[in-house]
Amino acid sequence: AQEVVLPGVFLQSELDTLVPVAYQDEVVEAYSGESQVVLMEGLSHSGLATETHEPLIEESIRWLWKQTKCKTNEPYSTS
Image (cartoon, rainbow, N blue to C red; front, side, top):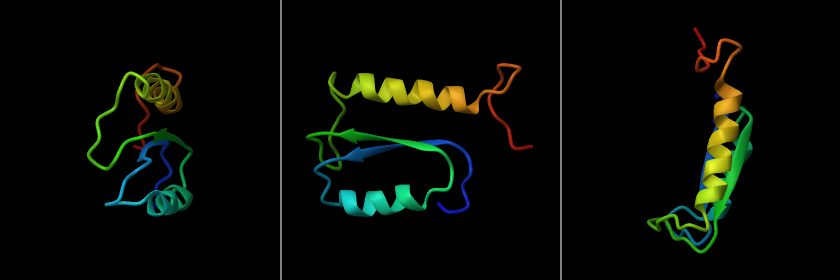
């Protein structure tokens, strides 16, 4: 995560017991690129997003798309 410089979105399951939020936070903190975190309230590791989560996910995806587009409106490329 420390070597990644591209933008990213992290979906965190609030009630995850397989990968507790504290561990998820460590990855987010180590991530070198710009990022956004979407806390999936009320979900466990295998939980499914609901209509409550969808607007937050959509907003983050829009943010990510804006971060990865260049002036030509093409997706970001490192090459």
